[in-house]
Image (cartoon, rainbow, N blue to C red):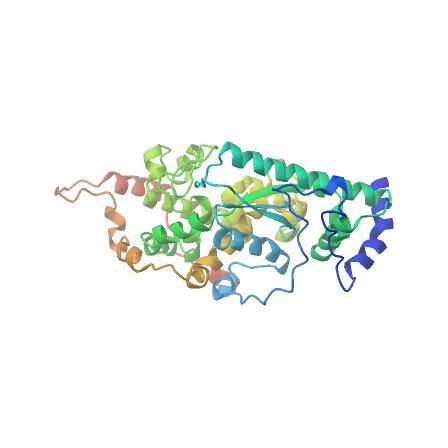
Amino acid sequence: MLLGLRFAAMLPFLLVTACASAPPELPNQAQRPPSLSISRDTAPPPAVPKPALSYKRPKLALIAGVFPKPPELEPQVAFWRKVYAKWSQAQVVIHDNRYLNLIYQVVRLPEPVEDGYYTPEQKALIDRRLEYWQERLRALETKLTQQMALDPWEEKLARYIAQRVGPEAVAGAAERVRSQRGLRERFRRGLEISQRYEQLFRGIFRQYGLPEELAYLPHIESSFQLNARSHAGAVGMWQFTPAAARTFIGDDSVEARLNPVLSAHGAARYLSSAYERLGSWPLAITAYNHGIGGMKRAKEQHGHDFVKIVREYDHPLFGFASRNYYAEFLAACEVVGQAERFFPDLDLRFAKAQAVPAVQLASFDRPKAKARTQPTRLESKLAKAAKRFPVKTRRSPRQSRN
């Protein structure tokens, strides 16, 4: 309570500072206080950015209002667009884990750079940068709560936070510092791999009366890697755990979960069930990460106000990944929808030529050299699962919302 009152007392100062016509220049090295000395891996607080060019929202995010994009989510969507299409795996972003438009520093990793792996030197560098920004933000908060004078470097940092979010975001900022590695190369490779399956997956989702763009979910689940595995025990392109696979695929074996077609059917059944129980696509898509039961609890507390759920829903398992899952999906849709813009050197013609024809859906794993009269293992599993989750003839969710 006392901390809140002190911050309230400092609001006029920060608002005046944020509205200053010209930000103060950082003092040079000779004038900089010892506590703010710059080492080789230390960067000054980020400069206040110039107004960004208006972003033309692609048609995909507006299709029949299926995937609403509240303006309050734009900072998160913009952040993940950059993660997927701008920042490389050699770059690590130091940012606020709640206010994703607060980017403190983009650190470049020393060589060698490998996908999904940090060398000990790289890990130590990131740890130092995280500790540095935690210390600077903690010192800033202390000075503001005690109404102490700020030096020029701290004034610039305070102004940056106030302009991007608001002066109240200084409170607790040190505890919200997080790092995120760029995924540009991985997403680009995922675009190439996805051409083999996109039409096949779109056909599966059409079969269940679902929006075809849900076929883009593997971009954020696995980057379309067939053998992807998570620490939670999820495997495959669609990242099914054994428990979810038993319910929605009808088989919890690793073989079934690694099968892209069988697991795509399971994903369609899962998302269909989630939408019918939760009633909106932001909730249903987030449930793919947080669980249908978890999102049902969130809905009971906050209704269909998805922005409020993201901001206020408090549960130990509803962390950074769950809060951002829907924004990641929207960002992936935008990048895929404008792949030529984000990856101008990308040529997908060869990848598209390798696509799995939709007519192979029923015989995806059928041996080509042998004639047979018995159904394949895949066909038997699909038939078994279809009895448990029959495809319903109904209007698609996008039509029923009009």
